[in-house]
Length: 170
Image 1 (tube, helix red, strand yellow):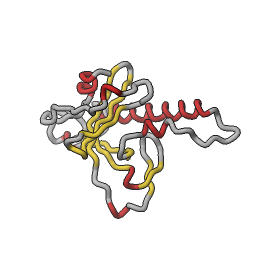
Image 2 (spheres, one colour; image 1 turned 90 degrees about the horizontal axis):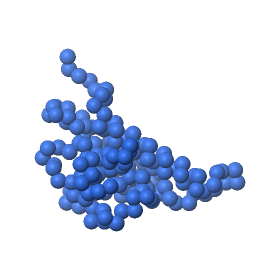
Image 3 (tube, rainbow, N blue to C red; image 1 turned 30 degrees about the vertical axis):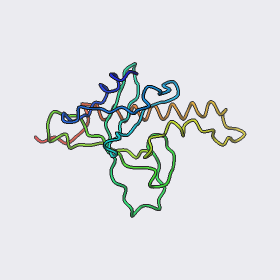
Image 4 (spheres, rainbow, N blue to C red; image 1 turned 135 degrees about the vertical axis):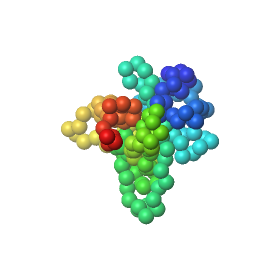
């Protein structure tokens, strides 16, 4: 994907947030090894971006990290994309504003629990502990990657879906 394709793919940008800052390492991205591209805006650390490719086009959303609640600091949490269980401070709630021309509907958001460092792709390539009757390691990793990819695409499409079910005033 090119810089222009990635910038144009972010569907839920507020009209005041026209600039999408790409990471410094964007040109060195190994596209064949990753299932999505996730990064944080260095000037706004609570802002993150998630971009993937589906049907030969880039799909992306702007995410905002919610503050972690210290009351639950001893709990383990599971990332909704990679399905890895991690310590509480390593998984955060990220929300994506739903795109709309109506100012009242711009307050609607969808959220997911996501690895705070956005490195789910790294976890997908770790070698799993294999039992005698399990499929081969390559098959396990391919299955993990396919699951991560399908969950990422499903989330981004749910943000961009204009036929979503929301309560409407009559």
